[in-house]
Image 1 (tube, rainbow, N blue to C red):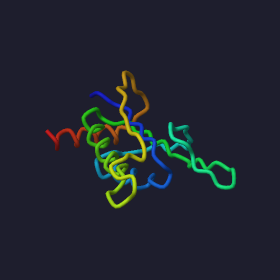
Image 2 (image 1 turned 60 degrees about the vertical axis):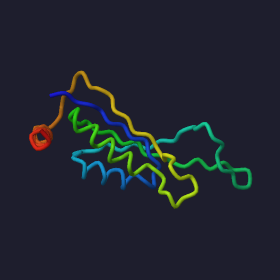
Image 3 (image 1 turned 90 degrees about the vertical axis):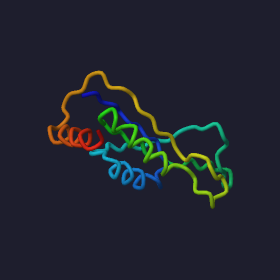
Image 4 (image 1 turned 135 degrees about the vertical axis):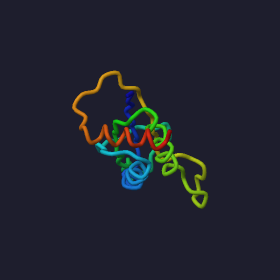
Length: 121
């Protein structure tokens, strides 16, 4: 079985929506880290103070085929709804990286991945 690491960097206010979407798409556990970034656009200022919103970094170890399904589910949550000013733009980034070696994953998680593969194919 091949695995991928899914990394999603999302605004803190979208964290729970992305976690829910990932779990609905078949993800098991999620590791959550806090972060902040520097983007290419200027930040909002208020009386000379710069506001930099916090971001959540979501890490998930997934079976390779499942990772694409979860990536698409999270990506859907990151697209700004058409009713907002910046329609069609993303509020975060999600990506996968292949894992060559993996240790410490629970047997229950492996069984969940196997069930997913059997159900999908």
